[in-house]
Image (cartoon, rainbow, N blue to C red; front, side):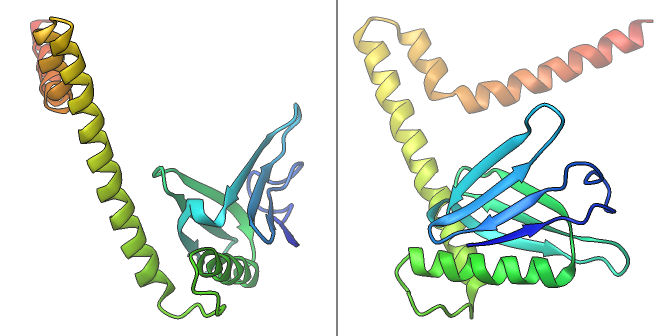
Length: 174
């Protein structure tokens, strides 16, 4: 287990610096504040990719992209710290998915492939669940609701466009 603490002179970390703890089964991200703070535990299987941002001047940040498309960012680390965190997390990801050799070569390509496969799987699951829900609604004699469930994404886009057009027309009336 290795803990990395953000620099206190970096923005947002003056009193309560961010902490990243790399453990055997995952990472723990802590963002303390005056009334407790936030703590998030990510298992290596939940992490799709790790990105670092290393500006020429200032402190580096590290982003963890998860299976459910969340992006968690921690700021205020040195370049060496973010590189070490990324290296350790990529080794953990490779070990969690069975490569086990600790090699981090091609880690970005592997992570990108894993992300795209996970997105496809989630889309298929969403479609299947929508179809099951629509079938259940049809069996209950609610065909209109079934159509709304089946075409919810399209309807939400159309609804959003109509809402924008409505507000545009309101702004022109004044």
